Image (tube, rainbow, N blue to C red):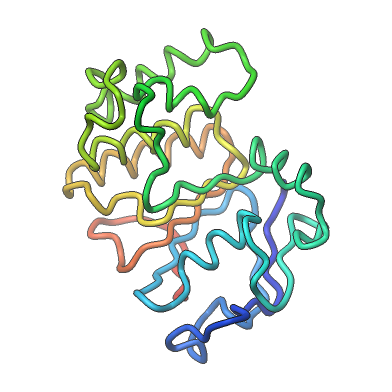
Length: 215
């Protein structure tokens, strides 16, 4: 997937706060592969609505979202699901870990039908860097929210898509772990050529070089 295009998007059934001042709603925006964006989206601005619309999980909006030249609303479900394997992924705010699976089992769900063995060293390295290597054989239901959040970040990076979208993925991490996770996401995305789009309530409390847009 080379880009994601938003053409005059606005929610169909509610009006976000400050929609008139938004740099995204009712605008023409292109997110190009390989670029890095931070979308500052305060409560009530429609953050999750936009993130899930970009993923193709709902169509409750006016305007068009396109994957390259493909209009998402016109795609068959099978095609949208196929895009989620390689084109676009979203780390939801609630992390969506399967509670009765171990952390490693949750992470390796992201490789789909590929050979598991080739991904284990990468999983172990990323987990070590995020301080969760000792949790890999622990069930997700027995981990703290912050531990599950770091595990979900590893899952998002184990087999990265062209576009990596994160909805408040650092909300339960302290500043040190935020920096470490941010650094890892940047490193992996650079290696894979992926675009990164963060949705956050506020600016990051550390230096970065992302383009900032206000929702």
